[in-house]
Structure formats: structure tokens, C-alpha cells
Image 1 (cartoon, rainbow, N blue to C red):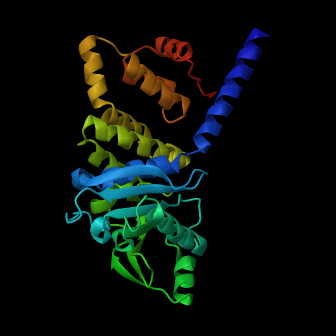
Image 2: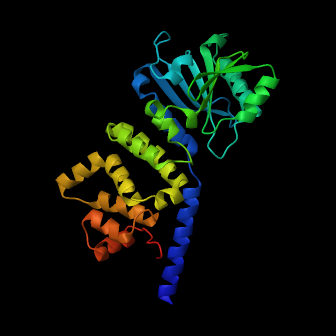
Image 3: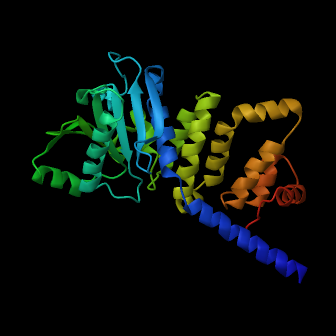
Length: 305
């Protein structure tokens, strides 16, 4: 009876974990990816996530403000930037349509009139960036029908003309992978080569930057879980991801003779079904029995075989 209750509880916990993984936090991941994307220009930019426009729940996904008006942004996404730059992001499952376009323009208008003094933020100092993984073909067609024009400025970057604010549409799947791997990797159509390139880029980051990358990586992996699990050598890929993101942490723990963080990390991969219990135990330097015991004590669920 007790064994059956334990099994039922484990199944319940596993279902809850699956539900949690389904509720992917695309927007926080995008804001983190955007900071990493513009890392080279970080000293000249100020980021605000979910900028509150009104007292009611009306907010911009992200604003990027240039600290110095005349500074030049190196990243080609920032070529269009003025002083105040508004970002509207759509996850791979959300639609970027003509109403999104007009909503972004409306948000820019509200943003312009927010300060206490008249024309404190000039309209010519505001830009709008709409970004999504797939190209919004229907929206771009609707823009043309409405009298707006657009041109391809660079791979994955389209400028819209005829609007009261400078507007660009970013199609992240079309971006150059060497220049924009942070945004390009934020997709539910991940390729193994792209993940490897993302991890290679992350390996050179500082601790603070790796914290941002961790937010992005969690969404990337969870949104492509089935594919990642099927890839040949996926265990090695995910263990490498773990090693990259936790390198500094693990070094400190080794010096202190502690392995708790390492065990938790591999236990999480086992619970998500990315690696086996045997692989987790081996990577943690433990016997399967000891590793399993540690997992259970820490509250992790071991998937049924």
C-alpha cells in the first residue's frame, strides 16, 4: 500500500514537473538574450524589462535606452536605434500580426507622452523593433496594403517606412548565426549545430553573463526537449551545457570538497529525462544507489523506465 502511494506521488510530481516545463518563459528568456545580443554595446545602453506604461496592466516587453545619444551601436540590430527603443517580442507559438504592429505604435505614442513635461521625449527619438522567430509574411503583406513600405536592410532585418517612428522587423531565424546566435537560438526549431554554437559562445561569458544565458538555455532545451533527447550524443551535449554554465560554481565546490551543487544539477537532468540515472551517477562520481538516494532526499523524481 505504501509503495503504491509512493508511486502515485512520484507520478503526480512528474506530471506537475511536465506542466511546469510546458509553461515556458519566452519573454524573460528574450530579454536575457537581448542583453547578451547587445553585450558589446552594454555600457551605452540601459535595459528595462516589461516597462509599465499605465497603472493598469499595459506594458512594453523591453525598452533599451541609449545612455549617450550620439554613441554608435556596433550590433547591426542597433543600427536603427535612437535614444529610446521599444521592443515587442513574440514567442514561436505567438502570432506577429497587423494588430501587433499597431499596438506597438500605440505603445510608442503612450511612451512619448509619459513624462511630466511636454515633448520631453521627442517622437524622433523613439524606435520600434518587432521580433519573432518566423517571418510574419501575412503582416508584411497587410503593411503593404495599408500603404507602408519595407526593405531588407540585412539578413533577418527589415525596415518599415511610412510610420511616424522608425520601425524594424527582426526575423531571428534569418539572422546571421555568427553575429546573432543569442537571438537565433531562441526557437522551438533548434538544430544540434546551433545549440553547440550557442554553448561555445556561452563558454566565454563571465559569471553574470552565464546567469543570463542560463535563463535562455532553459527555455531552449525545454521547448526542444524531444529533439534534444533523440540527438545522438545528447547526453554529452547537455552535460557540456551544464559544465559551461556552472564552471565557476563547480570549481569553488571542488575547492571546498563539496559536490552538492553538482549532484543537484545532474539530478535535474535525470528528472527531465535528458540523461539516465546511471549517467548522472557516473558524472557525479557516485554509485547509482548513492546518487539515487541523494536525488530522493533532495526531492527529485526518478522517471519510470
